[in-house]
Length: 386
Ligand code: NZQ
Ligand code: ZN
Image (cartoon, rainbow, N blue to C red; front, side, top):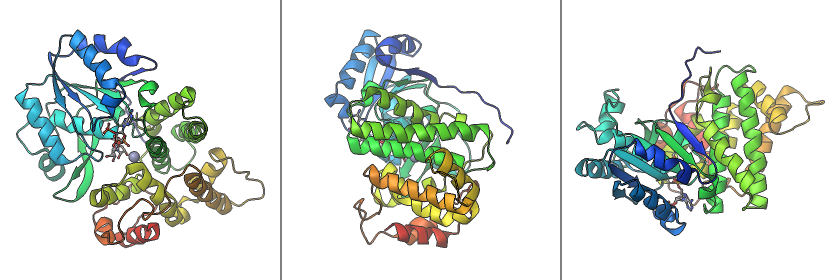
């Protein structure tokens, strides 16, 4: 096992009426000027905005709204938020949404406190933010687990890169499964698959022998598969939804990563696909995973075979390890079809003339992946996904 230090800075308030029960005390520790950040308006339709505004007003806060944060948030949107935060002397950011709002605000928290260009500072000079506006998250769309970490995935449109920037950890995250009940079902499925992908990408890293983190990980994967099936049968199943919300947070709260180097090659490829096409994250992963895993197979046989048996319930009797590994990929691909996720980029509406060579060329090759991919092979993967 890799050496590790484990400490987690995010306080999670999980469950029914988590905002009403916990926000007043949490806001009590925050300064007077609060930025309320949200996306394209779902929070206004489902009443979450009104509930939170009521709690903010009751706490005596001056509220500045930062709205219109788009899916796959852009660096330009980060700059808009940072300007607003500076102009209004924001003391605390309350981010309300899914991964996009939650990520955008992490970088706003850092950019508002420095005149340096954060992209340049972090990606070219390899520095990091030193001063941050404290923040809280209210999760309205589960999947990314973004509320649990301080990495933000931001699209730099000028540079055609969708990549990580580092900002603040949230002081707290409010996870009330009821807040996610109005998510469109396509986003529920996409979010659940993203969470499953985080588990798989963590599992596939080293050490590749059986270990505690991976055994917990297998349980998370089984949980996501079971509860997504239950949710598709009954979208109002609040028990299944609660499990999904917590399983997604588990994927990114560090526990599954303890003692591991992670893989995340599928994510790196999908992020660049996103930079060029602005596609839905979970859907992109669903198309990429089975194809990428067929390419990884020669180096991944023991891990894939374990996933077949321990996660997908394949009977190992009479099967070789390689047959089991193939059975895992088959089970994963079948599940993707079963839950209605796309299986090709064309189905996602990605144009045929997309510059896949540029996407492959600009994709980060991860050190944790068991197969050392070349850019040429990643291009082959992308072409098979078309
Ligand atoms: O913008 P609004 O109107 O709020 O609508 C959103 C959006 O259209 C809607 N939505 C959210 N909560 C809702 C709701 N609609 C109805 N009722 C609700 N309760 O859902 C749509 C998608 O939201 P978005 O935040 O874009 O989705 P997601 O949570 O999947 O986040 C995707 C972003 O997170 C990044 C992705 O790359 C992408 O940019 N990721 C962040 C990670 C991290 N920081 O750890 C890890 C992930 O691997 C991922 O890369
Ligand atoms: Zn993801």
